[in-house]
Amino acid sequence: MDITLEQLSVVLIEPSVPQQKIITRYLNAQGVKTISYYDNGNHALASIISEQPDLVISALYLPDMTGTDLLHSLRKEPDTQNIVFMLISSETRFQALDPIRQAGAVAILPKPFTEEQLRAALYSTIDLIDPKELELENFDTEDLKVLIVDDSSMARRHVTRVLKDMGIEDIIEAADGIEAVPILENNLFDLVITDYNMPEMDGEALVSHIRTKSIQSSVPVLMVTSEEDEVRLAAARKSGVSALSDKPFEPENIRALITRLLSEG
Image (cartoon, rainbow, N blue to C red; front, side, top):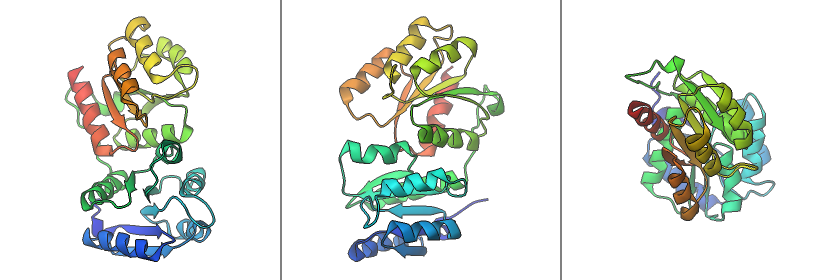
């Protein structure tokens, strides 16, 4: 199945009519034509459940809820938990945006956003709907064993979905570094994917443990994180992380990073 931008169905939730028009113009310019409009979260939720659109685009602040509330409601229901979600907001505060990042948004676009930013987010949407499997020279994808470490259950679910779409089935999850350590002692992994900010033992400490105390000290470690502090990220690199990726991430970027890390191994 090859989905095109012209085939995408979108629910747009934006209280401001001028902003609706601006976003619509940008979507139309990319070829997206099937758009349903809502100015509040409750009406949008009812429509999303019945329509099952390919993509939900929302503002952060709605009259009756936040975009975070809306996304978390979608993630809690089996019928809507995998619907792709994009935030468009002028909000820049980490504490306001991080719950959206952790819940597996495909993109967080600023106001104003560029045509290139929207295009990248739309193609990431297609990648989630119509994913491509990993193609590795030295591994059979279905034989790969991956550990995901993240204190956000929604973040773990999102990463797991992306990996399974790539053909990786053998996945174990841990909620933080403390939980991951005994798992690492009793299982051999081809790849570890970890967050940075976690209780008890964070990503930097976990990577340091893997590199200095684990029986699999050379396992590739990919850190997928919303951490923005460059000093802390530099410390993570120094501890031995193999690669870093932001949240939200583009599936194609994760696919390329995994391919590179496993090829190097």
